[in-house]
Amino acid sequence: MSGLEITGIAPFFIVRDVPASLAFYRHRLGFEIAFPGPEPGDIFFGIVQRGAAMVMLKSIGVEPRPNCLRDIGEGIARWDAYPHVPDPDALAAEFLARGAKFSEPLRDTDDGLRGFEVQDADGYVLFFGRPVAETAP
Image 1 (cartoon, rainbow, N blue to C red):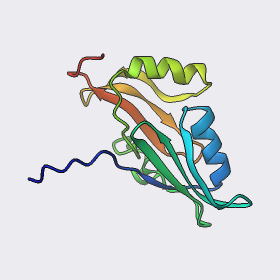
Image 2: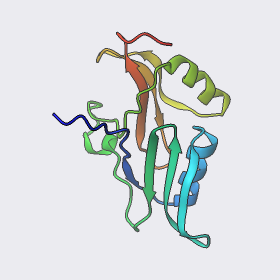
Image 3: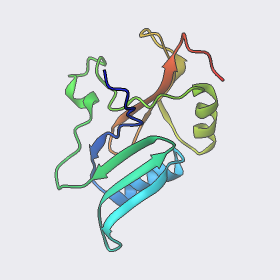
């Protein structure tokens, strides 16, 4: 196995309205807007970033298809991204203070994870958490 480290990965979400999505990630989840473009008057692609976590957003004229719509209401494949966070309890408190609403509250899951779910403006579900066995800082 190579000794070269991969320091992050970014999901690529198809969205209805990039400026609205950028605003959601910035104001509700505390991400920074790393790139809106390609031009100030024509924003159909964007990147948001918080620490090593990034999300790419693009409007291409089709409806978003989050995983929760693909799993036929079973609830077994609803996450579109899993940002690993060492202290989900503290992050949950921050997000609540920002006015974010959780699609699933902070809890220990049946999968052995501790965290919470947020559904973005286009229905994509992000689970912010860590394995229960990991100790918080």
